[in-house]
Image 1 (cartoon, rainbow, N blue to C red):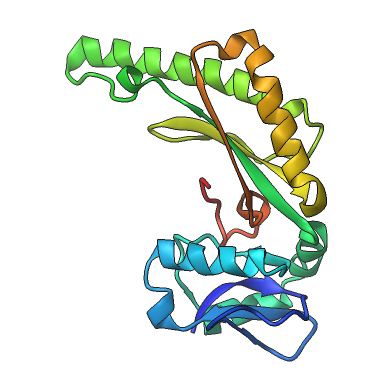
Image 2 (image 1 turned 30 degrees about the vertical axis):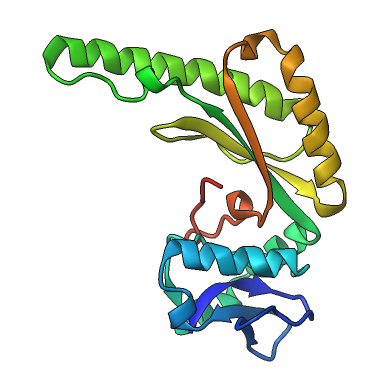
Length: 205
């Protein structure tokens, strides 16, 4: 069995997903045949989340067998993290980089100039992104930089997530710094960006 995360929920998981363990914290698991790829594992985790289960997710890029996940049941950090994420999920804000800025040219001096320009652009976009996230006054993950975007996650109550998402989207056109920039807000997702035991890592949703 492949571990998807840890939970205190008493809800029955959907589909082929099961809970292993008889203590207060159990392990959400999927059969190997349904958790072959990172996309498969993400799909199963989202199904659990949409079924109302609160859980501490393992990064889908990591395929962790049940026996390894069992070792974390004795970790003193696990229960407080589960309590922190109860009834919560994340919205992910992505500020996409311009297409012509994503691939710095190669070769000598021009490569160095392009690399600095790319770094400066990412710094500028990160400041804009943090301005959007800070306005929510909610916990946020560290900013991630990918080849295509800068991103961060906001931890939000399930009950208010869709209202907050609608408000953020409605406020974006009024921000002059976002003129001709492409912003995407996705979710609600399991709280990958806040599952900070070292083995879990983080995911760009």
